[in-house]
Length: 114
Image (cartoon, rainbow, N blue to C red; front, side, top):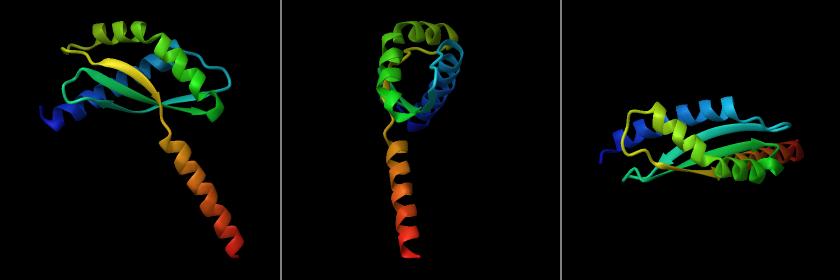
């Protein structure tokens, strides 16, 4: 399967899942962002990476989304004219947290160097 098709599927799923999360889920005192979707080459599974601020609430948010994944999956199935629809799995995105820590360290080094 061409990687171009996978990229299109990833983009489409990211758009639709992001809309559903914004519309159907309210997380008080937390900013929830769908950062990207990574679909397997055989279109069986799609990992939806979630970033949450504050970071302490990330595990709870991902747990809630995975608990409600059947409803999300059903809405995606009705919205998209695509077969097969990959099984969605929500995962905590750690890249943003890592980048933030690196930024803090660089800023600290910059201040110490002056």
